Image 1: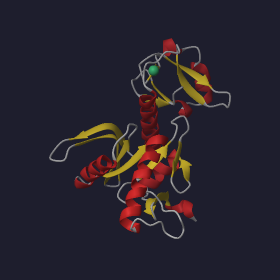
Image 2: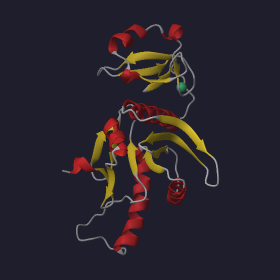
Image 3: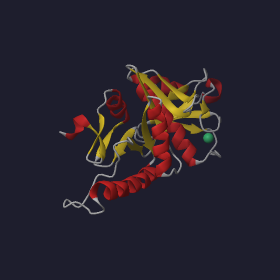
Image 4: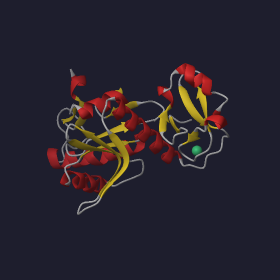
Length: 234
Ligand SMILES: [Zn+2]
């Protein structure tokens, strides 16, 4: 089950963007249409789930691609699609050389800003998040991290410990809890690319499109240890 596939032009398409009459017309014509799975290049077939959502599936049940990679592909396709729908020019797998080289999953260009969206599925130590974040800052690129559920929780645990130690002297405040996020490390979670929903600490829960818009409008902000969307807090 996948949110995106490669069409006959070689471009990535999102299942939910295809009008339903067109989608119905695609059923049973996969080989002829040349739709391919992004994970392994197998022929992709158009399917509709029992709750009515459109998705791509392998023509046979076999796929050797690791679930983490499938998550990464789906997340990237959704972010690129979300940004483009808002009119923000966006490219994937962008490399910049020079003294402080970086390579990002998604680079958005918007109103003179460059924003890297790092889709980090695999384990990475906090100091590596910070090192990479600094590298972007050094080249005037903003960077926002998007993680799967497990990685998000692991990072939040690590950053929460840092806040407790450095900002609260190792003692929990009277309220008993502290927001776990660091101001210099914007982060959110996409649990499942089949559902375009962004979640995070402090009850952040918005559509992927709302999150993309908040990033473009600088409304995705840090406050009291939480990366939240400003307008959602009222
Ligand atoms: Zn596959």
